[in-house]
Length: 315
Image 1 (cartoon, helix red, strand yellow):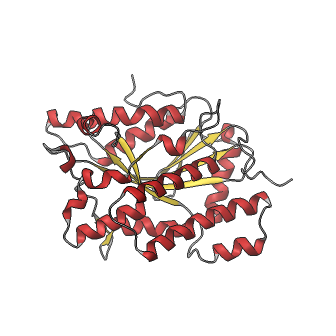
Image 2 (tube, rainbow, N blue to C red):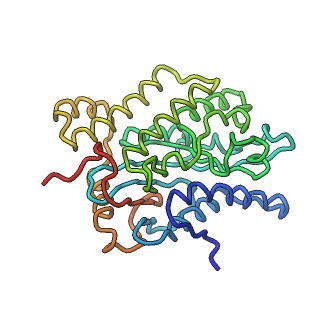
């Protein structure tokens, strides 16, 4: 019997795994032993690894490293389109009043000089990816919130960064789940397809769902983004649309370059091509590859083209 859970699809994993994570975290109250974020992230990655068929490929760093962040790619066979998320995980420390539970390490600093992890994550968006937080939460909080909090709740990294800046300035209430939960949306938002009969979202479906969820969450959140950060998010969204349109032949090279020039550091083409190669030839690719990369990569692969906006390889 494996500790990793068995699911039939990435969508089923996104729907059911959060509840199991919530129960897992709840156990540490009894044990008086705190499970770290990387423990939950490892179990999550292992559960992706157990998906049947050729739905997934996992890349892991050659050097053993601890860390709760990972990259998630969504691709589809026969397509040049990819959606790329960078996800930073944080776990809740529960309190008697559930709304007062805190993400104690949300203002964590790394490197030398010490830099806020939230700033580093948001800066990564300049590389053409969507930065998100994954918050791991206790079962009692999930129950008490009446659907507002899930065992794994995703959130827009730009809005979380603003909350972190408030914390650094002295308002530690922004560590509380009750303060942050208006930002939350479920993992199924970015993984489950709205197309009947299809499980995994296409890259464009996932991007659209993420953008919609982020926009809605900002409308619910009491702390607005600054003009500069709003512009940063808009640039990222424009870049994704321009890249997809260009590959589909719906935009001129000049229009695409106009947007991409606003990105400081585009996603390395070598990495993109490597991931696309895995998507197109996953049956011939090892299930797990050990590569010189800084964090794990989960590559989810769908079958066929599910919508006419998904760019296909040029003949």
